[in-house]
Length: 222
Length: 222
Image (cartoon, rainbow over all chains, first blue to last red; front, side):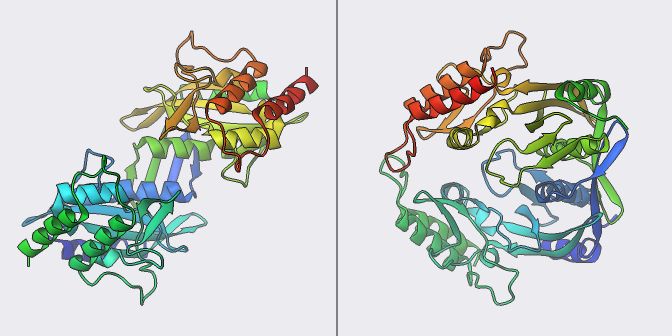
């Protein structure tokens, strides 16, 4: 049994054991089996299979109990505890999975600033006749995953004039634009908040207070 | 091979071959298999497995290409074509799946009134250690599936003061209250529309015009 003691080892293990592998999802009822091809199912199943496989390889990885928060998991490495998420998408498309609801992203970071250091496992699959093939595996920081979009300081889905989901930069492109560092990322979040201010009743702290608190957290680890 | 020639036969086949059966979902990558237990996955997989199994039993059932519309399928029986949907839920809970977005439900019925006669296959499963067991199977009309709620003329999820998803009555309870007939159902939809009127720009027909058109459709088949 491999013992995964840090993020680098996890990244290597993904490349060695998961990348380019074939997979299949089978549903059996009353001894009649059918193979699933739906994207939603493949993505959800991978998000369920991977943590079980990490456990089999000696990594303790626990699902967060608050489903509204991000990221979904916490990984307990030898020397550090890392908030982690697993995002799977059909590699034939651009990655357009949701990172978090914008308001939730903003609040969670303020209340638990160490989540700025969360890692995102990004897994791209391609459906095949008999299942799927894993075509992409990587582990990215939030700064590597996110970037400015054409219309907003950060990749953002907007619905009825309100910020909705935070979306990744198109990291499938080699020359994709992501944030240089976490300082750049938090500034973009603050600018986005200022474009979509909260009402006085909703606002518990100003965007400047938000920025200062997150800056402090980053500087603590510099 | 059984030839399913009408709804009654389909209902009987479900009781005979699916009810009380065990099932499992397995995801295999690189020859390592894990069993899935997540509710979303079981529900989605059942919704994928069942139409394939119906086809194996001689029933032509085709997915609707418009994903925003309801219901999801059309079944081609010997003598009739029936709009049909498959709704699966964890039988340990009350059925709370979405039938449709209210505005979409309202518009689709106006534009395609024969969808009033859609049938809903309701499948309840219970997760077990090694997969799941099917504990409930039925096929219901919209009048049997829907009923008034405490706050609204029809079971309705409301978000930020706007009608959101149309939800089923709690048919797990023996004495649950559903609509007596389609006339009662369309009146409840009209009353709900009047509680949440559309803006002048959004409104293409009045709720009275809506009701008249749907009444005509019902009377055509009386």
